[in-house]
Amino acid sequence: MRLQYPSDINIILVPCTGKVDVLHILHAFEKGADGVYAVGCMEGDCHYNSGNLRARKRVEQAQSILETIGIGGERAQMYNLSSSEGPRFAQIAAEMDEKIRNLGPNPIKLAKKKAA
Amino acid sequence: MIVADRKPIEEIIAEIKEHEKILILGCNECVTVCEAGGKKEVGVLASALRMYFLNQGRDVKLDEITLERQCDHEYLEEIRDVIDQYDAVVSLACGVGVQFMAEKYHTMPVYPGVNTCFLGVTEKRGLWTERCQACGQCILARTGGICPVSRCAKRILNGPCGGSTQGSCEINKEISCAWQLIIDRLKALDRLDDYEQIDPIKDWSTDRAGGPRKVEREDVQQ
Image 1: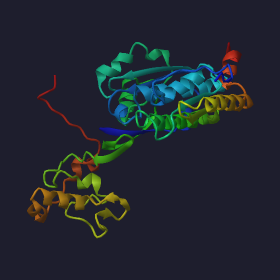
Image 2 (image 1 turned 90 degrees about the vertical axis):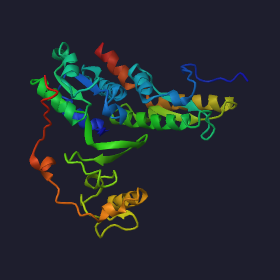
Image 3 (image 1 turned 180 degrees about the vertical axis):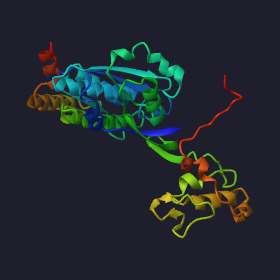
Image 4 (image 1 turned 45 degrees about the horizontal axis):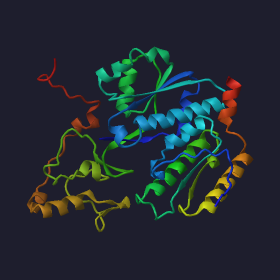
């Protein structure tokens, strides 16, 4: 299944999306990421029971902070899919890539360049 | 513990927007447990503020330090050597820490990063409820360990008021009637006779009615 997905997506592996914290998401944006999305297991299927549900809440928290500070909450997203859904993974990657391209680059990256 | 809640970022931004070098100061005690002002919350707030100011085209220095406590001299002394690098501090400690910080560093503007709410318990993660109002004259021995001062909306001391309905308080059905809880507890302890004893008028001078309070113990003073 040699599926293609946008090459500018940097995958960070975590044991469970429950490991993803608001701080990780914010730091990614601070370092210049244009968008961040967490891909967890299907809701109800978490090996650790509630890791993906916690991740969703943290993504929502990050969205609210990003919206408040003018970066845009849409740049952070949460998706759920099962490990056997390769085509869906590629589809989500393309979807997120398109969404972020439409939003344009992270304003922090531009501000940093201007300041330098 | 002292329970606090996070202040909206917009409110903090409005307070500190004129400053250029800001220290975000967390506290490792109560506000860490209630997830309002510990190391993690300091990190989140600092990161959000750094991005906000950058986005505004402003070069604001924002550093993060979390002290063991902000209500003791020795811990607040730990920032003595670095405090001059900043022109403002956002303290994520409770109101006690914010004030002690302001007293100790007299010329440094200090802004609160949390709203201090009450003395309470963690019922479950993300749910904290009030248990004590620090009235200074504890009556829990007579009330089966349930406090009518903090848990009764009227703070009444001799049985429920007429608003107690099926165990709930009249101000909100979600709130248990403290006196119903006390009666149930005394029943469980087989001490219901205690309920018949009328409490004398409480000395409220040890509560806030007597002004700011202090506890002084010469036996432990140096």
